[in-house]
Image (cartoon, rainbow, N blue to C red; front, side):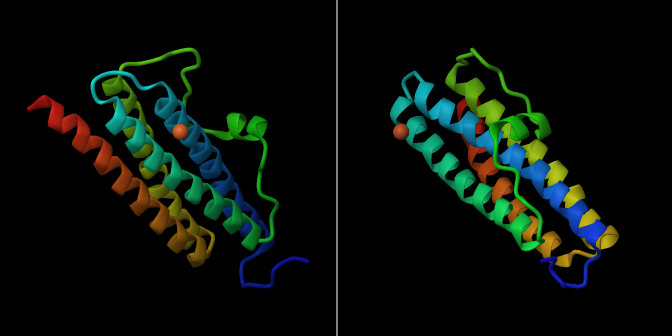
Length: 161
Ligand SMILES: [Fe+2]
C-alpha cells in the first residue's frame, strides 16, 4: 500500500534513491571503522581500539535509521552487500593495513565526503522533491557525521603539535 503523505510516487522514489546511496556509504564506512578497530596497532592501541568501536556503534545506529526512513517512504530498503558495494560513493582499500594515523585520516576523509553529499541531498529533498521530512532527517545525519569528523580531526591535530 503506497503511503498517502503528500509526496508524489516519483518523488518518494527519488528520495528513497538518495537514502539508498547514503545507506551504502554508511555501510562501507561502518565496515572500515570495524576493520580498523580490529587491526589497529601501535602505542595508542587501547585508546584507538575503543575509539573506533564507539564510531562504528554510532554508524550502526545511523544505518538502521536510514534504512527505516526508506521504509517510511514506502520503498524497500537495500539490504545486501552486493547492492551497497555497487551504490557507494566511498572507496575501500582491500588488503591494506595502514598505520594508525592513516586509519584516522581515511575515516575522516570518508566522513567529510558523506557530509558534503548529504549537504546537497538536504536541499534536493526539501526544494526539488518536497520531502521536508527526509530533508530534516538528513540534517540530523549530517550533524552526526560532523561530530564524528571533529573527533577524528582532533586526534590528528593533537599529533602535529
Ligand atoms: Fe571488538
